[in-house]
Length: 267
Image 1 (cartoon, rainbow, N blue to C red):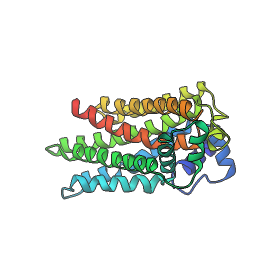
Image 2: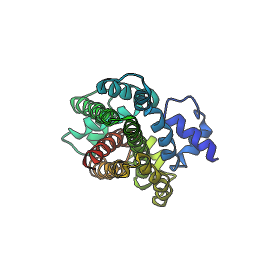
Image 3: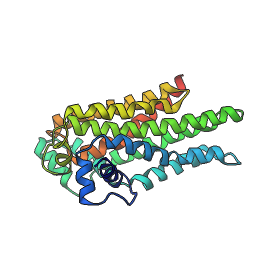
Image 4: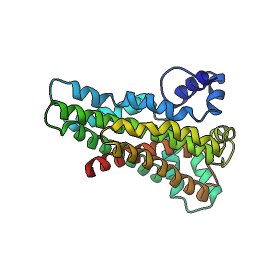
């Protein structure tokens, strides 16, 4: 069951062609603990541009590394969750009640609010990647250079684990606004299910060693983002939906990356 749930989580959260069966999906829907586990896998994949830049025989410009990171993120995870960002952006600018906001979210047309939200998330990801690239290339000396690369990789993995843990926590503590993807995930989970999620995510803070504060800041920023989005969704939408979960993943990743970079700068 655990292996099937993990396969379902990989199939749902990434573009890796596994876990696309009904059985895998049903096992995943009942196992929110799989979110942070997949976060470790995805984090390792999307950190490859920083690892390869550290191994390259020549210096690679930070903007090039940052662009490669953004491309790898969406190649590995797809853009399905960005649809949630766009829908929440459109709903956020609606001057109406909950029903009107939910109606706008179901509209396939992209509005101004959704456009701005998408632009901010992608820009936020790119600028965070630029900061990480500077961390990985700012050190002098072989050992210091390796330390910079490992710190950047640690922040990336911690941010991805944090984003997945934030989304999973929202699954456990959120109530669905209506029938759909959100309800299919939240229906089988309870608040107590968040304990193993947090336990599995916590070790990610150590991956930015010796800058543990950077990893911890990334995790906490992701979880704080989930709390803020949940509060907004309850007030404005009446609960959590699939769009809210998808947007949480994307926004929490950006917030976590920036928090990790800021913590590194201050430490």
